[in-house]
Length: 167
Length: 419
Ligand code: SF4
Image (tube, rainbow over all chains, first blue to last red; front, side, top):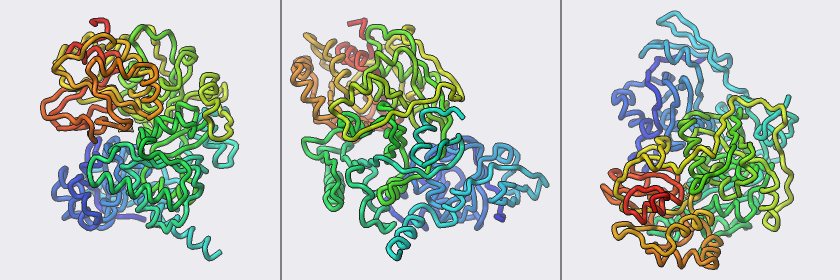
């Protein structure tokens, strides 16, 4: 079970807004964590708690398909992103980088900023504890859930490679 | 369950009878590509995951196309890194030096992408190979790195929109106009997470270059891929070109589509997309007469031989307006050679064009014709976002080769019928 506070955002949050290109010259996810979403909500990076949720509108993660965007969110401690919909490549990159995301239009519209939520990643059930309300998100596909629990795509491949050398 | 072409191809590559929309499948891929923008990230991720060898050296294509011939030190280092990786791993397909060109166009013309195949590329326009009846998808650099090692990737099975092309192309109307009409109708998210599958009587008259343009532009509707059937036109194109045996996988007759979009070509006139959105589409005749500083005829969706022919047809015996720089950059070396043999190159040069080496040119603001602040361009490429082709204060109109050539002659945005 994941628990945390909600941080709400609008539609079309693009990957530049998640982590600006000016920070990409440094390949340092701790640095990205300090600047994540800073152009949209400057206070976010300093105040986000470990396991907190991003709750956003349509087409989250649109724009250039950088993998640093989900990495920056993960490094900042974000537990999961809940949105009406995700840009196609953000969807791929999130699971590949080991970040959980959920499509749930009902929750995305109803949840208020700073509401306390809990989320069961296996069933996709989201509870808004402040509003005493529940929402059913599409549960994460078992293949993708495994990918996230293995630490993302490259870790999964690395482990498979090690096993094959041993075997 | 009856399946679409996309579902059929995914099912065939993951060893299932069926692939259901929304399902996640892990599938064997037939070809993996990267370019000089993505390759450094791909190579880093390959090593990070502990990769020692690639799954099949014949099935990996890495082409430096955005900044070739190396425009600066960084580009040179990247090209060098790619070339070393290719040598180390014995990659079978090398396109360097005089063989270099736009990766997507090369992969199609060299018969490296084939019907029924499943392909991934670390570039959004990898979907271009849908022209040949492949399911080809642009993915992230980690996806490509992982596939280099394992030969596999995961996919969310898409629904498909059936795009039915009917009627006949009027004079001066071509693939780019069909594509722009499609973008106007579907918008940037209209095909979000779906495939476009092209059908209809017009297909018999659309050659493989036109299909590349449309398959490539599919991504601008939010689509995962754009696929053509492997019909006789396709089979004819592949004769003597295909590098491997292939087997077409077409849709079932009863396949279900989320939507049908019919485009009647007969009703179209030459179109443009106004700055700064590929979706802000209007007839060229109604888009104003803004003075133009540069015209670019090139890219994977506008630098093919048929584009050069249309442009040369209009430019023959005329002179480009003195204010305009006309950049013509063939997408591949064989297109450049054909342009020389057919006399197109001479026509273009006599008209006052600058003929550049096969590459992406200024399409992504790389080099060979980057725009200054305040400059206006007409371009046969495919994106006109703020700053895409140079300075953030430059402005780009997207159009087919006829409008581009007409504008080069007029020195302002112009339709071909004005010439
Ligand atoms: S020509 Fe333009 S769109 Fe095509 S691959 Fe090159 S930069 Fe991308």
